[in-house]
Length: 607
Image (tube, rainbow, N blue to C red):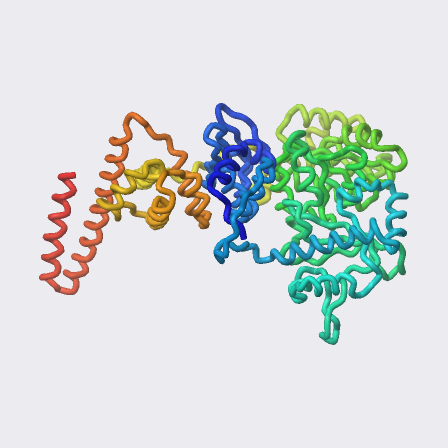
């Protein structure tokens, strides 16, 4: 493992702009001096996550998460300190001059590191077989006929798995991988008789599936030709490093363009994303297996205001589009739906009409949520039949009634009237009835309210205000983080000043830090603390505003408050002990405690 020189760490920190860095993960908007966005560490609908360009720090007023560029990477990617620094160094073009260390605590702590390494090995193996071997020629020709260029094949790491039972298995054995772990990782399967393993993927075009950091964590394999019994696509099973509800195909590539444009294109499958990329659509992602999850939407909402959903034109595609649109609307996103003609999928359309037409006529010309709902409701109906007309109006009004914009209501009511021949007044009366029914349902079952009403950016309930003691501890810690001499003085004179356990733990760690580094550096101190909750407390304290002209007065006030609080708590404890002694008729002990309480109260008045 590597130990990174302190001057390199400082160079990485100073050359990393925290706004640019966090902006790759969170959509930020400038408000005053700071930038704000949705916190990536907890779910919220109103931005409470603040990034300070001046201080190069972030803080969430909702959950309390705080930190700098390095600790942000540590927290968001669950990386140890060294990995976070190496990642940022690569981002800023700084070469890591690392010193080798045998410190066991510095070893990578990623429990499934070998699984990720094995997937990288497999991806390189499959890519080599496709691009550089005779066995891969048929698959390569197939891809080229489908419009794939070598550049796109290399960009997405597309490969070929040999029609061999043990090609990858033997490679992993030669590389000394634990085959039980490889089975858990989904790369191989144990033989029925338990004598060994065989490859999961054989004779398939291989598409690597990557996590948010670009690591290959799974595969999807497509057959070239086969029997009807074979599935067209074979996907990796869910594993410790691959969960469909977390992974969005192409997220690591698209994130920056999504953030820049403020919009994300969501497709049903990864082939749609690859095709769209070839057509110049660079801000698209896809779900795995048509299953959109709340976790996916939370991730997308952090970096995009607008979501454009583009599914296949067949019945299944319409159903998926409606399901995705309703879920995204409930999350408060601005939802639009790009519709494909007939039963086409994106690849069909691009192949027939070209990439420019796809961008201009489909992606850049989407339907609003309500316009899509009307088109969806109309698809299966014949408006020359009265029952179909009534059902059509009812289905549209069910979605329109809870929407708050009078202009939007009026627009679609008039459109309904034109399409059906029913008067505007009659449709308005019907909508009032539906709205009333929905209100009653909400009163009976408040949980249902969120199911019918788009989320609004209401101000969240304020977090609990800190007590005077909590504020005193935080401000005192702020001074200690910036003043080594003050720390030395308190360590000798008042080593038991802090009240809460987390502050006591930080005080102990700060003693070790000053012993090693001598000079104050709250950034480096926070980075050295592995416990995320303690890190949060440290960096929250570091962000407290101090008055440089009243430094001594602030410190003395904090010390005085904490000393008074400790004495007050001691008095309360002794009062309780005194009552217990009286109950036990231990009058000698009760009298002794009474004297101690009197003395403590005198001390309290002299402070």
